[in-house]
Length: 220
View 1 (cartoon, rainbow, N blue to C red):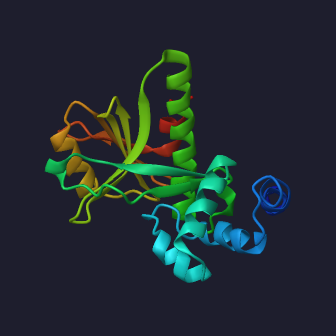
View 2 (cartoon, one colour):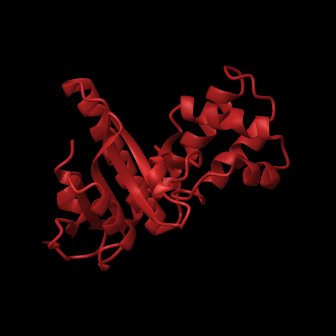
């Protein structure tokens, strides 16, 4: 187990270095590759949180335009994926703040954030499969409103929620934000999964609580 983890970390580090040196420096015309590598490393600590370009600009001491361009490059090269917020005006949802996740999720140090990143990749794979194989107009979003309620993932079909997913590390009572959003979209499936928990039940209002492994096995 230890050898496998060390090998994965070595691969992850080598992947990041090759991405910066071979895919970004010349093809993308980025002169200051050290700054974009710092951005890539900094992003691993921000997984699962709304992404602030201004905060990143201040951290790296570069322009807003530079950070925006570098994020676009990282996304175009499949280093990261950004997830847009979901919500209509009656929900008082945030409209612009995006979250991001890494395709190479082993880079993420915090275990809860790393697990959320892993789930994001599985959901994204399922969304792409449904788009390509069944022609469904699915999208992966998240929900957050001005009162701070947040649901980790919202899968939409032509802008209509079809599945609400909340991610926890261990067994927890059903998240209040998940109950709130499910009450407003009762036709959408709602699931709370955990990495290390064992709870497996369905609430009276139809929210499924279960360990992550059977949920993820049900996807592609």
